[in-house]
Length: 129
Picture 1 (cartoon, rainbow, N blue to C red):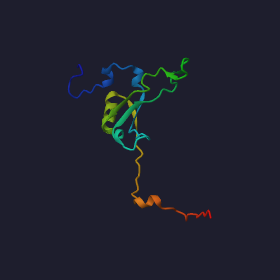
Picture 2 (picture 1 turned 60 degrees about the vertical axis):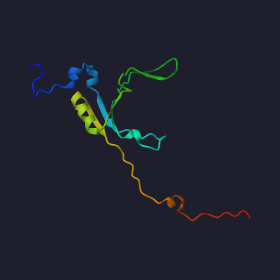
Picture 3 (picture 1 turned 45 degrees about the vertical axis):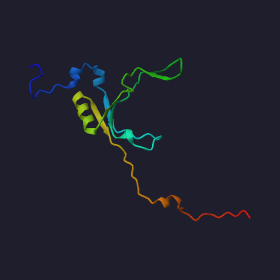
Picture 4 (picture 1 turned 180 degrees about the horizontal axis):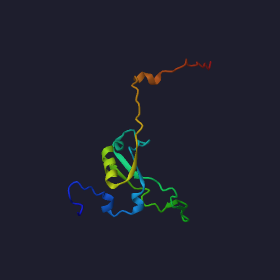
């Protein structure tokens, strides 16, 4: 029994050599929102998985610049996936606990171009002479 027999599923976390504290953390699976500075939605079609922030955080203020420093090596790490199912399968295979944050879809109501110039109330007329 070396794990190569059919039907025996060995979690990838056992084989990966990852530290135990990483295996006990929860991951969040979500689809990132489009950036506010861009009108297109080019980078918002993939799903992302990132690790939760530690409760203590092991944070301190850097004395040189005053920036916040952290000992959490997984804080800025994320993985991108094509679909939500790919991310869930990866989390299951690695043995991670996960939760899925569903995206808030934008509801676009079709309007005519002339609707931009309509006023709800009657406009006040100001006469200068």
